[in-house]
Amino acid sequence: MSHACNCGCSDNSNSSSQGLQIIPRPDSTPVISQTELKISGMTCGHCVSSVSEELKEIANVQDVEIILDAKGISTAMLSTSGTIEEIEEEVLRAAVEEAGYTLESVSN
Image (cartoon, rainbow, N blue to C red; front, top):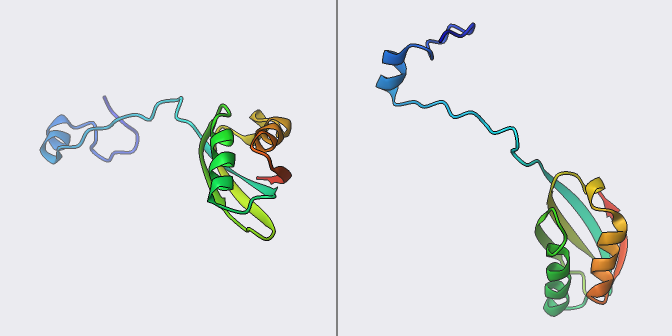
């Protein structure tokens, strides 16, 4: 097998002596996107837990991190596989409202 780059990676004796193995990246490697939610009404750690649990139940949501502002609008950062367009804003709003709070805005 020969490559146009001439780096020597197709030389079996060279690659085995270096102990290198080329592993191709699968085509289905997920893209992780970050989405910021602004949520009002949260005042404590229990609020954070409730909202986190609801948001993590949404398909494609990988992780949720919340910065609590007990006297104002808290920020939730969602890590999602794919893009937020795949998760409609109404689904996010419903999850936040199910926990008892108000979704003020969504931004990518």
